[in-house]
Image (cartoon, rainbow, N blue to C red; front, side, top):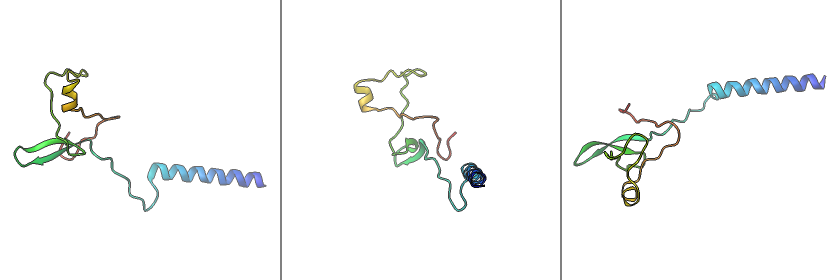
Length: 94
């Protein structure tokens, strides 16, 4: 009898855990992922792209797809935006 009760409790815990993971616990607000790239306003240039810390993003036209040609002093002056996983675009960006 004790074993059957323990198995029943285990099944209930597993089902409850699955429901919470897939649907969220009642009353909890799902956290939103912060955008990696956002649109910021600059007093002189208007709308610009920046990272989540407000650093302006630039395009280095000497770079190639998946190959950076900015290193050493260039990379120190213009550090790249490094993102783990898939990038997240802010409001107004695709």
